[in-house]
Amino acid sequence: DSVASRGLGDVYKRQELQRRIDTAKELDFGSIFQRSLDLFKETWVQGLILTLISIAITLPLIMLIYIPMIVYGIADPSAFEQGDLAALPIFIMAITLIVVIVIISALSFALQAAFFKMIKKIDHKETNEDVNFFMYFKQPYLKKSLILSLALIGIALVSALLCYLPLIYAIVPLQFFVLFFAFHPELSISEVIKLSFKLGNKKWLITFGLILVAGILAQFVGMLLCFVGVFFTASFGYLPLYHIYKDVIGFDNQPEIFETNSI
Image (cartoon, rainbow, N blue to C red; front, side, top):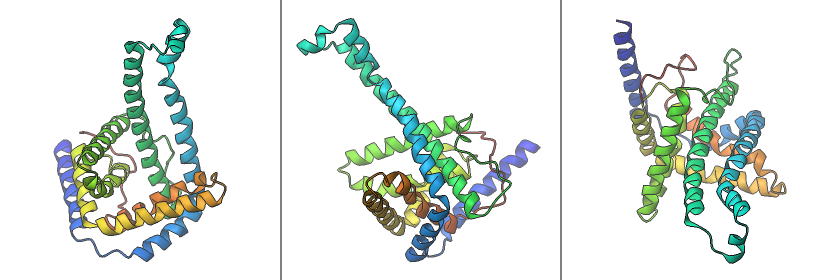
């Protein structure tokens, strides 16, 4: 009975999310942008930490790509002098590159989801929520993060192969993958994708405009601060997405971490 009740509850929740998207009010560009600026003043430290953690995770993983070449060079130093590189280390390097990209994508996805939870906690002045950057690094969330990040990369690649125009369209729904995962990790992979595209279609123009303006502003201000400022301003690009999700979907008094029963 409890399983059946939980199943009915999940169905109702998914229908409710779809209903909120269908009945979403018109969003105001200026209001969202201003609220994003105000929230940035409260969350820039967490955004800086997100950037630094991402770099700390990414750099060692990138170094793994060069291990096959380093090992090969130690075993046969003359190969580099002659420019005669064996196919095997190049093949291993290519496979390692793919694996590293997948790992980095999954970890980055999980970190971004945790960052959105932190934004919500700060925005709503919550004091009793246990939120940290590594909250989605445990099972089953990391597995779902991996699959969603692969789906995101796959959709982006296919869109790019179709003369890039579909990618311009797809880039908006793809941004919402991490938000639905962050606030509703109980949703299946297919449900996250469907709801993200539904929300992206509904609010495509304003989302694209805010992403573009926020990204340009973050980079411009960062460069004015001797380029190092980009580390401080990079997270600003996430905040308009958060406010769009907040205005359309909203937040319920739900447990912060759900049991994930399906993918």
